[in-house]
Image (cartoon, rainbow, N blue to C red; front, side, top):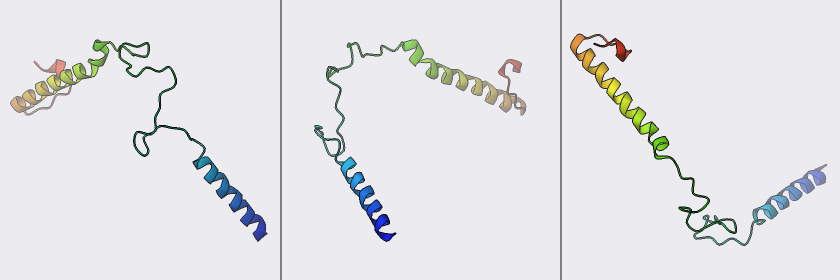
Length: 94
């Protein structure tokens, strides 16, 4: 029984050590940084067919919503400072 367990552990460790050395032939810029583009991928993405060309309006949606949220919070704060009553719905504030 001990021989079977020892054999199983030995085989398992040998498989782990082989898989650690399986990926070879990379050009690492520094230890641990070994990303390489696929063949045919351009050095610069901008202007290539891989350029995502994001719509500026889509990118600014979150910034716009944050500005609107801050404006609503300012109205709530001013109303609370004047009346001492907190109103969540900004449309109810005169």
